[in-house]
Image (tube, rainbow, N blue to C red; front, side):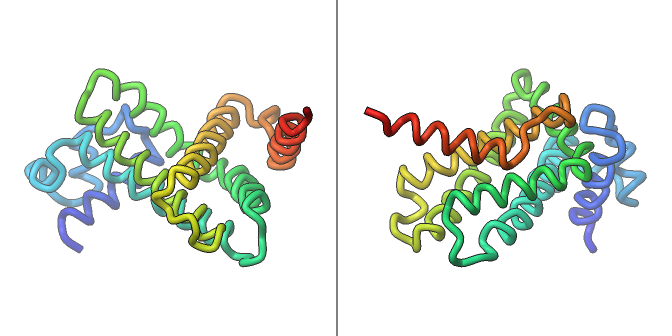
Length: 194
């Protein structure tokens, strides 16, 4: 494993153990067995490394959620959303420290244009990936670039982000997957009334 991979692995562990705001460059060097110059060489800055690590963690998590959502080829898009929400809630306890790290990064993004751009790219990548799943749920027509797929992906991402935030604040009273499904069905039913 090269220095880049060593730094990413160390950053992922430190995000879980210390949180985004409390990790120093020296922590990363000590945990990775590399040197300070490697951070700048491979990632430009400590923030660049931490954001790359966050990106990898969320990409891995999205892969896990995708496998669950797409496991049943006969499931409807709403059933897939329900499965995704249920899986998300099941694993939030394991991901709590990483979610907090992401919130810490968000809090700093408004004052750091490079950080803001990296987080925007992370969000865009997640939305694009979800749009591809939406397209696959529809049998590939419309394609993932279609605005309808992007709109559904944006809704799914907003629901997952909102659910995670509500859970971070109050796990006992945060909505359950069945609550979200019932609310969505009620909203659609009420919208169809003349």
